[in-house]
View 1 (cartoon, rainbow, N blue to C red):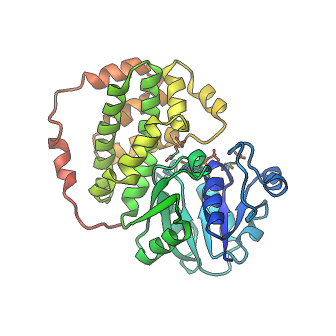
View 2: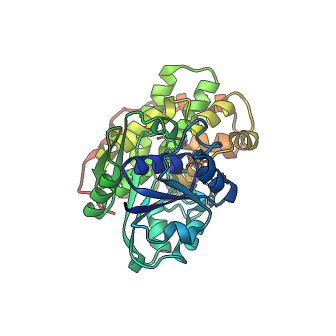
View 3: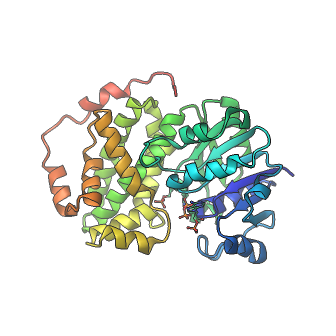
Length: 347
Ligand SMILES: NC(=O)C1=CN([C@@H]2O[C@H](COP(=O)(O)OP(=O)(O)OC[C@H]3O[C@@H](n4cnc5c(N)ncnc54)[C@H](OP(=O)(O)O)[C@@H]3O)[C@@H](O)[C@H]2O)C=CC1
Ligand SMILES: O=C(CO)COP(=O)(O)O
């Protein structure tokens, strides 16, 4: 049996460990908290993040990063985006040879506004990485852990590496597609969280399905505009990691981003909401990054801007919606058509 190191024992790291274990791999699931690693080994559960789920026996918890990485054929990184660089610095100290790096993180690094694959390339010397792959798509951990049918995409500039990752994860309930557009997959996965916050805010305000459909569709338009400006392929945004993930995150009660937005729409303060969630809400920091990127790249992103203002400038959510609705009249497609020509993918 081959070994895989999973770095990050939250909901998603644990659910993906189960997929790998079901596929016959020996998984070492690293947690930065010793008691969580002990719980995984002694009781075969991760009570905080996936309550009620029994983990397969071939998922071993560990608090020792060196032991997690020793002899591993691939490493899967699943920590919050803001922790990625620090965790990679620690991982780097224990690498002995080249490894396949896969990540399942849906965020942009605060401050640098870099994608996670860029952070991995900066922190892990070339001699220690065979390739970098992202795994993304509509996939709530809670449902994956119940082995409910789920589809995702794996993307890399290295096609063979994407196929390798596809082989690692693919099974009867977890269908994995390859995609050559790593920029589009990472941008779609990160920015959908901002729109999910918006969908939650809209629901919290008492608005209905019309408003949510508008947010999803026009949200996708602005994600595509920024993504293509950054080098993504437009078609990626109508796929699993674009429209697919927007649908699931904006409509599911499992979504932490939707739930956080819902509380904000009901009038709660951001600081209170975040401490109550107790899990990562990537859309908050990603809204800051996407807002800055939209200014840097001169891309119009009115929904992102409105959500940024609600989160960081204390704007009243209802006023933000009123302002969005009162913007200048527009043609639906004209502003999009430029970015919808589909060049070959590039990084
Ligand atoms: N949950 C899901 O359904 C999905 C999540 N994702 C993405 O996966 C990524 C991780 O999310 P998810 O697992 O859900 O998050 P959770 O909040 O469930 O778990 C985060 C995990 O990371 C740990 N952690 C926090 N900071 C650090 C650090 N500095 N060093 C090491 N570990 C740390 C936490 O530990 P502690 O318990 O101590 O806080 C916890 O184990 C996010 O980018 C998310 O968008 C993608 C697809 C689906
Ligand atoms: O990315 C996800 C589902 O595809 C999980 O979304 P949340 O982080 O909002 O729970």
